[in-house]
Length: 233
Image (cartoon, rainbow, N blue to C red; front, top):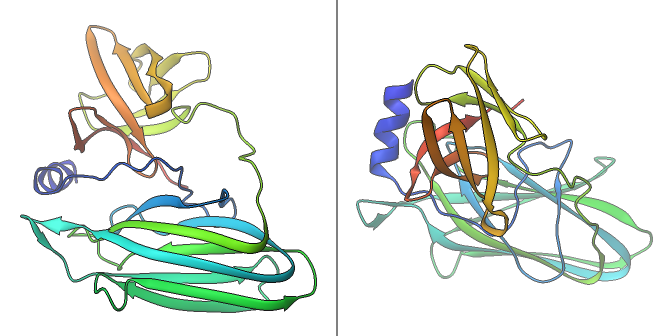
């Protein structure tokens, strides 16, 4: 599995997004006013966002911006956009592609009677051997409301699978310490919090890494190479 991951990493460059992205349908990430940006990736999985509709009319627009490329050539890929409410009383799906006439999906609702939480899923092709997907933008306008992210915990605080040495499952704790399942201890500290860049010290080894949602901690000079792969539950 590590050899496969390394091989894929040599073939592709992972795109960095400024927005956070949730991979858990039970815990979608709150959209913000204006354009929200994300990167869909078949090696990562479906991403989930949410916003609230208010009485009146609203509009959700999703634009497929930059498809993943293989050796400089764009892949023939699609993204499936699905909307549903918290009670699952409705479900709508549209597909976008990289073609100019098909790269935007628009959902509209008129005469909304009450406030509802709307979940939006962005699903790449179901492909685990070749990375497919790309950058997208998502924007909700009209009678809509937004929430703030509930967690203020640093995004690095979670459990990973080490792709280097033999640390095994590795926990990054909120107090700035790191614990490997093989008994190795270390520390982490934020170097550039805005861009989620960290310095990690594991005994005599020192890493400069960046956190990418869904991937984990990658090399800052080559985001296609994963150092600590995020465990998803």
